[in-house]
Length: 474
Image (cartoon, rainbow, N blue to C red; front, side, top):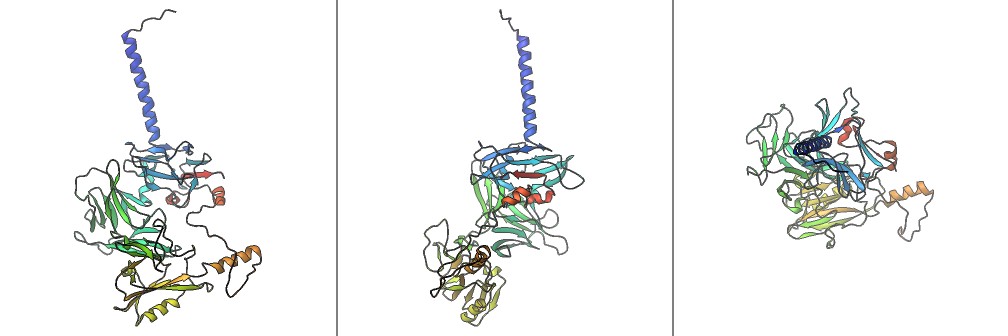
């Protein structure tokens, strides 16, 4: 068949039509990627190795999606796309498998008269649920471990490190960092910054203070208006840097600020500048000497610098109040607590023996540090962490170590399960049956997943019956 020539006008019209169709398709794709509507569903893809994007902001700088963790787990996170750095995470204490049987869906339900009709991600990285353009919920109200620039931090919020051990909260006129050293029952303050009130004062009865990470390069505290009651400057303070700032509570307990320098994050601020002043840089029963690294309170030298284990066993927790726990003690001269000024249990003792006895007979006490010059006795009511080594041998420490590592408690559990336990005694117990204690902070029971498909607990708990849900068939 003879082909008919195509004139230039026809070719031009076809080209314009193709361009128009392409533009419409691109606009539709862009609109879909910038909002999630009621009924949206997604499952992780087996072909994705690191991050599966579900929702982007208009600049494609931030994204909500599935982030792989430990190869087989996933977390629903908002990330900074150029670096894949997590900025916010849904239900940080829970984990789900990276599997096509795991499903995320948005149903708009808030257990309220109004329901959200879509989810959007703003250019600030703030994730919002909207109902007729009204904000019903936003991630900026429920930070996890990170604040981003221009994000406010109020007195009813907390930052929690990714390992769950450390947190940051605001007080009446200060911000502080806390360590969860005692099974969630006791939180020890280890860093405190009081408002300097140079430009404005904290006025009693005028409401709580709040903090905000400012794009000018500082962490400000405010009470009334825009005048700060305190400024903690970053290295980039008042420098003309057009970049993105974040403030993160790190797994080691330090509070650090960074800015994005196109290819990498640059350290811009840190609350604690000396390693030995961190809450536990050398682990349990560790000894940190400034400039010399880590060792152990019992004089053993650390070999594995990545995993500090000075005391064998994993049951140096809780207290000694059950009446069935034996312990032995480590005594060491030339040690002090890294944040003794923030400990509430400092008393006067006439001697090191009196200080030691006040802890020895106290079942909730794990140790004591005595200053032979001042006479102060600092009691430690949580499992022993890292001590600081000093040259002054008048500072003397006494530290309990659980000898049975929970053997009696485990034996009782064995009796309930097996019905009988036979012990062979030759002057001491030489064997017993026991169970390994699971890390309850990270564990997510399969039965809970089967019976309750909600993403819970975590920031989404404020969404009622889960505008987002995750179902995993096991």
